[in-house]
Image (cartoon, rainbow, N blue to C red; front, side, top):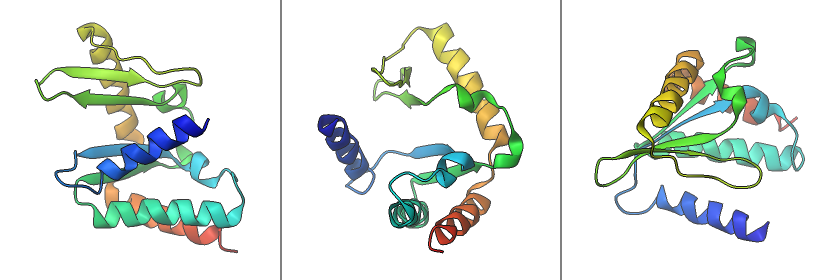
Length: 140
């Protein structure tokens, strides 16, 4: 567990270093409102997301509002990436492990899911406003 947490922290540092990659992330509002670690932890975590979205020009955060209902994003987390050689890959991440997928048809299917998810999400500025509202709700 500690190794996975350490790896996640290392990945976060990439976003604030020299020549950071572009990151577009979509978060489900329900995840932001689920109490994990208590109100103070939740407040700090969501405020960190707001800060990242505002201060890092290569980071765009979108939130799928709770009013959307079922959408392709409830199937689980994944990453789409373009490698330095131009190849597109996908990385679905589950509780046991992640797996890099480079088979074109599979990557295209995951990309189609990504586009559907983005279609349900709020634009960046509205997402920042919702994130700010959620962070403040954890204060009370």
